[in-house]
Length: 109
Image (cartoon, rainbow, N blue to C red; front, side, top):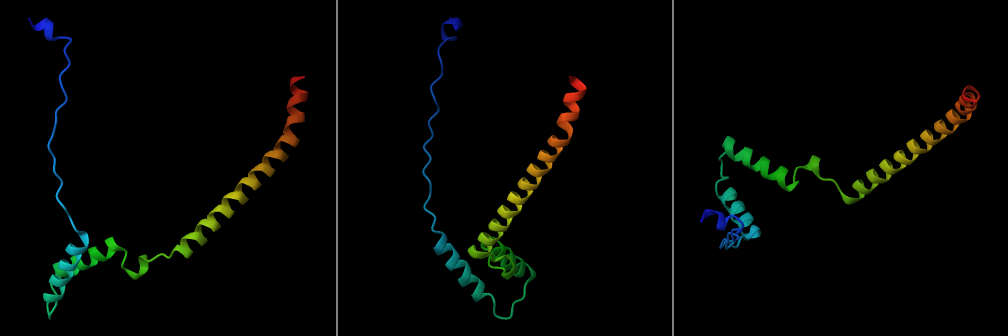
């Protein structure tokens, strides 16, 4: 009887997953309120660490702010450098072919 079920494929598993609603703005406001309530004269090491890590995640640290103009300028600079390297390689290849192809033709033929 087991060989009759050999060709029968099992049905897919079905899950009833209901995601919860999450409001990131509300959570951020609550965290800020907790931070300011506990800030009065309290320089706890853990509080400082959490404040720094949240700043890095948000990009709020002054060293990590990169404007769109700066990114665009860096992209242009990178593209110009890439074009210059390609041109230099093409010129080197052209001169190498001009010098070595006749020598190879003479050796072969």
